[in-house]
Length: 338
Ligand code: NDP
Image 1 (cartoon, protein in one colour):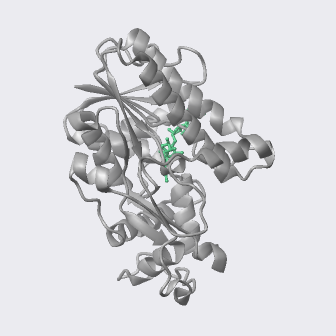
Image 2 (spheres, helix red, strand yellow):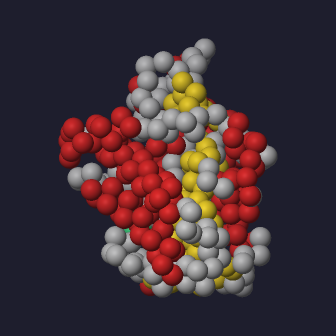
Image 3 (cartoon, protein in one colour):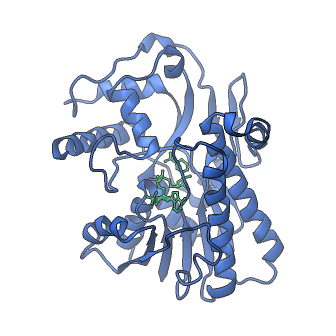
């Protein structure tokens, strides 16, 4: 079967492509410019049936009309995840228009498509709270939309990002509900929290990491987090497991019409610093130490239920140590090459 993967050059996208190629799927990956396809062509040369197509602006009407033709399955992963936005629409417009656009193109031209899997985010599940919480798939991050509506460009950029993922996911389900009686395909949305793993996208230097790996590098290597920030906690998943979850989402009948959290477990940023320091031999010298005593005896601020993931996919994501070792080793390789 042939899968269209949007944002194939992204941190998550490359791992999805790699995992699907290894499973024997043919892949058509979209990127914005020819030069962004070059790393992929070299990286996947001889590794399977892989082609790149250019979709230069996902906000243009009909942007995916050609790309969806002749594929059996679609993974929509392209969406801005960076904190460089100036106004909310810098993130919201491509997130929402890209998502609705691919659904519209499949409806019109994707006559062989059976399923669309969207890379959503726990950003659209999470809600701020002053006590520890465990969220499940019934939770929606309406407060992010409200905050962005109220504050506009003065809203914190991470909140703009959360609103972009929330609005894109809502728009996808709305489209699906409206059209599901007349379309031959169904929809699955995967919801990962903080995603980390060795980056294999094109990373010329450690200043050019994707957002989540930049956060990891800044925190555990450069020690850029103060006490309050080390005490913040979220949940995480290894992108290698997230990529397997995308494959399972394409293949598993029981995933039809579901939003599914894909999480490995909770952490404090100090936990990540501690795990990095526990790895021997140290892949990189002079790691940040933080303050291990900060988190002693403290409950994690939030976590996500993995009951649905376990029930539908029956798999268990890997643990922190493996992610950290492999990530630090990859940072060391990038540093040596730069
Ligand atoms: P990257 O920045 O590495 O990849 C994002 C991908 O989307 C790239 O291919 C990028 O293309 C493309 N993209 C971004 N903005 C646009 C735009 N305006 N028009 C067209 N394409 C665009 O981030 P990730 O790999 O981390 O993110 C991939 C997906 O995973 C996103 O949907 C993100 O929301 C989701 N996600 C990521 C998490 C994480 O912690 N990393 C957590 C939860 C969800 P280009 O290279 O040309 O910019």
